[in-house]
Length: 329
Image (tube, rainbow, N blue to C red; front, side, top):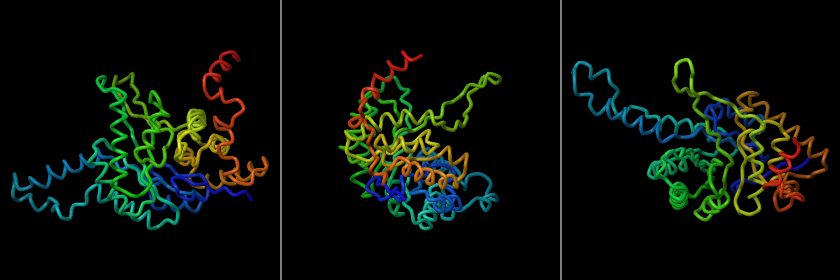
């Protein structure tokens, strides 16, 4: 059998498949199923700063002012010292998951303020999480914000986090940067150990019957993987950090392409929600079959062999693809 081990963020993985942040990775029974099926690591559901702020405001309104109004009702309200906040519940669940698994556990933070990121990162590090993922979900809708300011906010965040925690840091990015390679290089200089390409932004829809906005879950398809593969191929040998691919990886072909482009790991989400944790076994078996058929002895042997620097047709990763596709119609 081929050696399918990989290394991501300096962490040795038994294979390149990581269960991305999802409802599956927040359930103790499901993460155990994922581990049994052979997944190499799991990313916990994101801890959202907005949820913590809302929780604190609710506690403040409910507990701090419970003596205002009808005195007879005071006994029906919880006492502050026994109230379990959203953060308490999250940390308790994360601790249970970490202590139950033998595979690496990556914590995920999604926030806006520097203080919120730092405080929660330290708490997650105390749980012995193996790495920290920063989920930088930000829609730059303010027209007074320029690109430099938006990027500087997160490079500063990475720098401050690097000084505050010792675990590896990876940054989950969107493709919506004017010079993605330069930005990733800045993140590396400020202490990032890796990047995850790319975050999927769920788009709000318009209901034409009610004339209102609605949120709708749209799972990924394999077609989305190509953008991730392209950028990993362009940057993986230029910037010295770990690259993970996420968004649209459903089949063994998708996974192998990410490895050939230079990826160190592949995050799986939609396919696991659709097929269940047992699909990991099928992907791993198919990966072994593909490597045997192509006479590869290991994942490390094929990794990056079709990146920009090693491809015989590297121009296709840039404008060459655009021209050839248009002419082929």
